[in-house]
Image 1 (cartoon, helix red, strand yellow):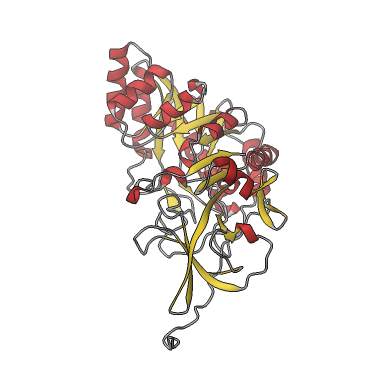
Image 2 (image 1 turned 135 degrees about the vertical axis):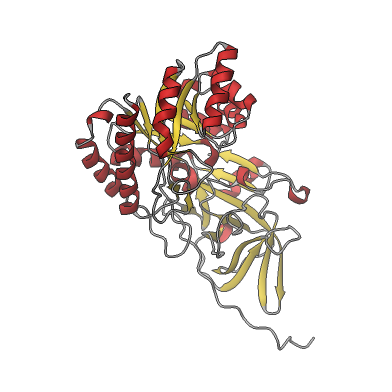
Length: 419
């Protein structure tokens, strides 16, 4: 057969940084003290999400060491609602933030004390509000209409409403991947409207739980995170004075990011903690007795997870190598570049079976779906992989399994394990 003269060897595109905590056993990627092939056998096959208990515990220890003791840490369940993770974090975090009635059912099933739970989200149905109110969950009210509905439901049920007001501030988190505040937004109540609604809530006899101010997520700049936190405290002080009532609780949002792409650098957590300690040392009197929280999801669990898929086929098309796996975007939508990114960049990825081998070829890793969108890595510089090898996508502990269209083309969900 004559070679295809049109074939052009592709240029390698950089891969994201593999989290430093991962090691190898006999040349193979390891997690939880065992090579990944051990867990694949235990799980019954691939595709498989593996989550490291040790890495989650280490991240929580880092947060406790860096942040002021006064600051409480909530877990954002939407990042990863896998029950063993929720049960692990029940003993490590101070609270849980949910965003649906479905997540309320998940935390209830995990045995979590529902008094530790707050419920945000711009489109809560009456059935969700009723379930939350009856369970004693703090409802983060997102509009005047939602406040009236929640009060009516609580009166009918004979159950006192526990509610905070979610604030849409006039500022946002600089450099955040997703902006949740500032300007016209579906999230929260515009700051100027908050004092009147808070007074109305208190006048109705509801239990006023304070404010929730979440401005953005996935920021890696410590100065930007600290500037946002300073602005949140200043706004909370202003609103408390205008409300005329102390704030029992202030959820300061989160925004802590993790490195996904080449060139990303980790958030300087000690710098964020030091800045917060300075802020807390001069906190205004209106917040002197306020319970202060941050809300983190991906920062706690994101780097602790990997997604494993097995190479089903190796093919060359026009001089380009494709590793076709049994996984894909139906489990890892974010890694495919179809979950909020404008320009597709490669996540951290490795040939797990050959983790310590020197890269020797440029190859694209794709899934098994009939769509050109199903790419886990474009032209990455990797060791040569063969049919049967395991591929690992890193930073898969957050917004993976439940943030992806698992039923697309009928392949079904991936397995999950906490190890």
